Length: 199
Ligand code: MN3
Image (cartoon, rainbow, N blue to C red; front, side, top):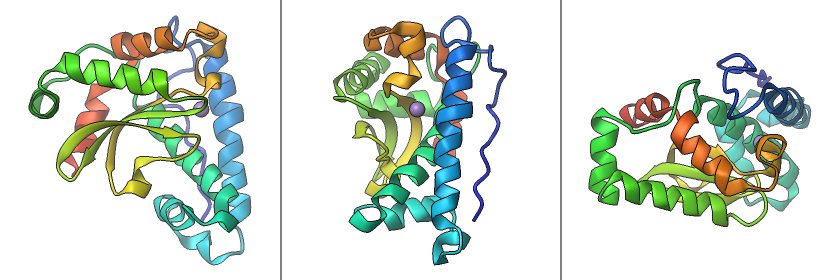
Protein backbone atom coordinates (compact mmCIF):
# COMPACT_ATOMS: atom_id res chain seq x y z
CA UNK A 1 0.00 0.00 0.00
CA UNK A 2 1.13 3.49 -0.65
CA UNK A 3 -1.18 5.80 1.21
CA UNK A 4 -0.97 9.19 -0.47
CA UNK A 5 -1.14 12.36 1.59
CA UNK A 6 -4.42 13.94 0.48
CA UNK A 7 -4.50 17.65 -0.28
CA UNK A 8 -6.48 19.76 2.16
CA UNK A 9 -10.09 19.95 0.92
CA UNK A 10 -9.80 23.79 0.99
CA UNK A 11 -7.13 26.48 0.64
CA UNK A 12 -4.66 26.99 3.47
CA UNK A 13 -6.21 30.37 4.31
CA UNK A 14 -9.82 29.16 3.94
CA UNK A 15 -10.42 28.71 7.68
CA UNK A 16 -8.98 32.11 8.56
CA UNK A 17 -9.35 33.82 11.04
CA UNK A 18 -10.35 30.77 13.10
CA UNK A 19 -7.50 28.49 12.06
CA UNK A 20 -4.64 30.27 10.33
CA UNK A 21 -2.82 29.27 7.15
CA UNK A 22 0.32 28.92 9.28
CA UNK A 23 -1.36 26.31 11.48
CA UNK A 24 -2.66 24.39 8.46
CA UNK A 25 0.72 24.53 6.71
CA UNK A 26 2.48 23.01 9.72
CA UNK A 27 -0.35 20.65 10.59
CA UNK A 28 -0.93 19.26 7.10
CA UNK A 29 2.46 19.63 5.42
CA UNK A 30 4.62 18.63 8.41
CA UNK A 31 2.61 16.63 10.97
CA UNK A 32 0.16 14.80 8.69
CA UNK A 33 2.78 14.29 5.99
CA UNK A 34 5.19 12.71 8.49
CA UNK A 35 2.57 10.21 9.69
CA UNK A 36 1.84 9.21 6.09
CA UNK A 37 5.52 8.83 5.20
CA UNK A 38 6.28 6.73 8.29
CA UNK A 39 3.22 4.54 7.77
CA UNK A 40 4.29 3.81 4.20
CA UNK A 41 7.90 3.12 5.26
CA UNK A 42 6.72 0.68 7.94
CA UNK A 43 4.43 -1.32 5.63
CA UNK A 44 6.70 -1.34 2.59
CA UNK A 45 7.80 -4.89 1.66
CA UNK A 46 5.59 -6.45 4.34
CA UNK A 47 2.32 -8.42 4.00
CA UNK A 48 0.55 -5.21 5.13
CA UNK A 49 1.67 -3.38 2.01
CA UNK A 50 -1.52 -4.36 0.18
CA UNK A 51 -3.95 -3.69 3.03
CA UNK A 52 -6.30 -0.72 3.18
CA UNK A 53 -5.28 1.74 5.88
CA UNK A 54 -8.37 1.04 8.01
CA UNK A 55 -7.43 -2.65 8.02
CA UNK A 56 -3.83 -1.85 9.00
CA UNK A 57 -5.14 0.25 11.89
CA UNK A 58 -7.43 -2.49 13.18
CA UNK A 59 -4.82 -5.18 12.70
CA UNK A 60 -2.00 -3.29 14.45
CA UNK A 61 -4.10 -2.05 17.40
CA UNK A 62 -3.12 -3.60 20.71
CA UNK A 63 -0.06 -5.38 19.27
CA UNK A 64 2.87 -3.95 21.21
CA UNK A 65 5.26 -4.95 18.43
CA UNK A 66 3.23 -2.82 16.02
CA UNK A 67 2.63 0.22 18.26
CA UNK A 68 4.67 2.51 16.02
CA UNK A 69 2.82 1.35 12.93
CA UNK A 70 -0.52 1.76 14.68
CA UNK A 71 0.30 5.31 15.77
CA UNK A 72 1.39 6.44 12.32
CA UNK A 73 -1.36 4.66 10.36
CA UNK A 74 -4.10 5.87 12.70
CA UNK A 75 -2.74 9.43 12.69
CA UNK A 76 -2.60 9.35 8.87
CA UNK A 77 -6.28 8.31 8.79
CA UNK A 78 -7.42 10.59 11.65
CA UNK A 79 -6.03 13.74 10.04
CA UNK A 80 -7.72 13.10 6.68
CA UNK A 81 -10.98 12.66 8.60
CA UNK A 82 -10.33 15.83 10.59
CA UNK A 83 -9.74 18.02 7.49
CA UNK A 84 -13.10 16.86 6.18
CA UNK A 85 -14.77 17.51 9.54
CA UNK A 86 -14.25 21.25 8.97
CA UNK A 87 -15.15 23.61 6.14
CA UNK A 88 -14.98 27.31 5.38
CA UNK A 89 -18.19 28.89 6.67
CA UNK A 90 -18.94 25.82 8.76
CA UNK A 91 -20.39 25.62 12.22
CA UNK A 92 -23.90 26.04 13.47
CA UNK A 93 -26.60 23.43 13.52
CA UNK A 94 -26.88 20.10 11.71
CA UNK A 95 -29.99 19.48 9.59
CA UNK A 96 -32.08 16.68 8.17
CA UNK A 97 -31.66 13.08 9.30
CA UNK A 98 -28.52 13.84 11.32
CA UNK A 99 -30.26 16.59 13.30
CA UNK A 100 -33.19 14.25 13.98
CA UNK A 101 -30.84 11.48 15.11
CA UNK A 102 -28.97 13.89 17.43
CA UNK A 103 -32.29 14.94 18.96
CA UNK A 104 -33.29 11.30 19.45
CA UNK A 105 -30.00 10.10 20.92
CA UNK A 106 -28.89 13.16 22.93
CA UNK A 107 -32.28 14.76 23.67
CA UNK A 108 -31.33 17.97 21.85
CA UNK A 109 -28.43 19.67 20.10
CA UNK A 110 -27.31 21.52 23.23
CA UNK A 111 -26.79 18.22 25.05
CA UNK A 112 -24.63 16.98 22.16
CA UNK A 113 -22.68 20.24 22.20
CA UNK A 114 -22.05 20.05 25.95
CA UNK A 115 -20.88 16.43 25.66
CA UNK A 116 -18.57 17.20 22.71
CA UNK A 117 -17.06 20.22 24.45
CA UNK A 118 -16.47 18.22 27.61
CA UNK A 119 -14.87 15.34 25.69
CA UNK A 120 -12.46 17.71 23.94
CA UNK A 121 -11.65 19.71 27.04
CA UNK A 122 -11.11 16.72 29.35
CA UNK A 123 -8.98 14.57 27.00
CA UNK A 124 -5.81 14.86 29.09
CA UNK A 125 -2.81 15.58 26.87
CA UNK A 126 -3.05 14.66 23.20
CA UNK A 127 -6.01 13.03 21.51
CA UNK A 128 -9.29 13.41 19.70
CA UNK A 129 -12.99 14.03 20.33
CA UNK A 130 -15.50 12.16 18.15
CA UNK A 131 -19.12 11.84 17.21
CA UNK A 132 -19.65 8.15 16.45
CA UNK A 133 -22.40 5.71 15.65
CA UNK A 134 -22.13 2.81 18.11
CA UNK A 135 -24.57 -0.07 17.59
CA UNK A 136 -27.08 2.28 15.99
CA UNK A 137 -26.78 5.01 18.64
CA UNK A 138 -24.91 8.31 18.34
CA UNK A 139 -22.31 8.83 21.06
CA UNK A 140 -19.59 11.35 21.86
CA UNK A 141 -16.23 9.80 22.71
CA UNK A 142 -12.65 10.87 23.28
CA UNK A 143 -9.51 8.91 22.46
CA UNK A 144 -5.88 9.36 23.57
CA UNK A 145 -2.99 9.95 21.16
CA UNK A 146 -3.68 8.16 17.83
CA UNK A 147 -6.48 5.87 18.96
CA UNK A 148 -9.69 6.07 16.93
CA UNK A 149 -13.23 4.60 16.93
CA UNK A 150 -12.50 2.07 14.17
CA UNK A 151 -10.70 -0.13 16.71
CA UNK A 152 -13.81 -0.14 18.92
CA UNK A 153 -16.17 -1.21 16.14
CA UNK A 154 -17.74 2.25 15.99
CA UNK A 155 -18.44 4.34 12.87
CA UNK A 156 -16.85 7.80 13.13
CA UNK A 157 -19.01 10.67 11.86
CA UNK A 158 -16.93 13.67 12.96
CA UNK A 159 -13.66 14.40 14.73
CA UNK A 160 -11.79 17.26 16.37
CA UNK A 161 -8.03 17.11 16.87
CA UNK A 162 -7.13 18.28 20.39
CA UNK A 163 -3.38 17.76 20.11
CA UNK A 164 -1.73 21.10 20.92
CA UNK A 165 -0.35 21.41 17.40
CA UNK A 166 -3.96 21.77 16.14
CA UNK A 167 -4.58 25.02 17.99
CA UNK A 168 -1.52 26.39 19.76
CA UNK A 169 -0.47 28.98 17.14
CA UNK A 170 -4.01 30.41 17.00
CA UNK A 171 -5.34 29.88 20.54
CA UNK A 172 -2.16 29.22 22.60
CA UNK A 173 -3.17 27.23 25.68
CA UNK A 174 -6.89 28.06 25.41
CA UNK A 175 -8.20 24.73 24.18
CA UNK A 176 -11.81 25.53 25.24
CA UNK A 177 -11.78 28.57 22.91
CA UNK A 178 -10.62 26.38 20.01
CA UNK A 179 -13.41 23.89 20.79
CA UNK A 180 -16.02 26.67 20.89
CA UNK A 181 -14.74 27.98 17.55
CA UNK A 182 -14.76 24.49 16.02
CA UNK A 183 -18.46 24.14 16.84
CA UNK A 184 -19.52 27.72 16.04
CA UNK A 185 -17.55 28.36 12.85
CA UNK A 186 -15.80 25.28 11.46
CA UNK A 187 -17.70 22.00 11.89
CA UNK A 188 -18.79 20.43 8.59
CA UNK A 189 -22.18 18.89 9.31
CA UNK A 190 -22.60 17.90 5.65
CA UNK A 191 -19.61 15.56 6.00
CA UNK A 192 -20.98 14.02 9.22
CA UNK A 193 -24.39 13.56 7.56
CA UNK A 194 -22.72 11.77 4.65
CA UNK A 195 -20.96 9.38 7.05
CA UNK A 196 -24.30 8.66 8.75
CA UNK A 197 -26.16 8.06 5.50
CA UNK A 198 -23.40 5.69 4.32
CA UNK A 199 -23.98 3.36 7.29
MN1 MN3 B 1 -2.94 16.75 14.50
